[in-house]
Length: 111
Length: 110
Image (tube, rainbow over all chains, first blue to last red):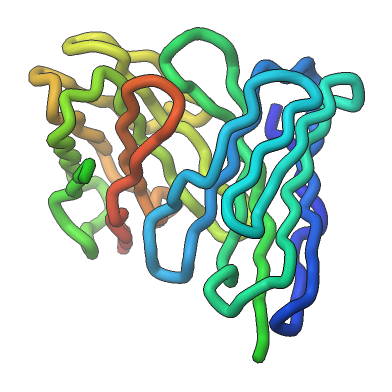
C-alpha cells in the first residue's frame, strides 16, 4: 500500500521552513527520501534505517518514528534550489532495495 | 558517477504496436527497476530484477513484460501498446538501498 504524503503541495518564500510527512499503515523497515526537480530524474536524498533516527543533509533533515509509522522531512531556510517534488519510499523488506513510493509533495520556493 | 541511460527520451507509438524500452547501467548493479510516473500518482513499480534472468512483478505489471539477459541491461516490453500506457517510464538501478534513476522515456501511444 502506497504511503500517504502530506501536504500534496506547498509554496514557500526563500528562507522559510517546511515539513513534509510520510505515513504508512504498515510497519516501517526503512524510509527513503528522493527529490525530483522539474524535467529531471529523481535523486536520492537520504535513508533512515531505524526508528527514531534523524539524518541531515545540509539544511534538509528527516526523522523516522516507528511507533507512529511516520517519517518527516524538514527543510530549513529553504533555497530556490529546493524546489521540486519530494517522494518518500518505504522498503518492502529484503535486500533488493524494493521500494513503494508515495505520490509526492510538490515544493515551490519563490524569491 | 553512476550512469543509467535509457534508449529514448521521447517515443511515439501506435496502438497495438510492440514497444521496447531499453535501460543500461554502468555500475555493475544487481538490482534494476522499471517505474511509470503519472501526474498525481507518483512512481509506481512495474517490474524489478535482482539478477540476470530473474524478474519479479511490481505493483502494476499488467500489459508489460521485461527481459534481463545481461547484468547491465533491463528491457521493458509493451506487447501491444494501448493509449492508457501513455506515460513517463523511469528505469533505476541499485546495489543495495540507494536507487539511481535514468532520465526517463516519455511514451505517447496514439
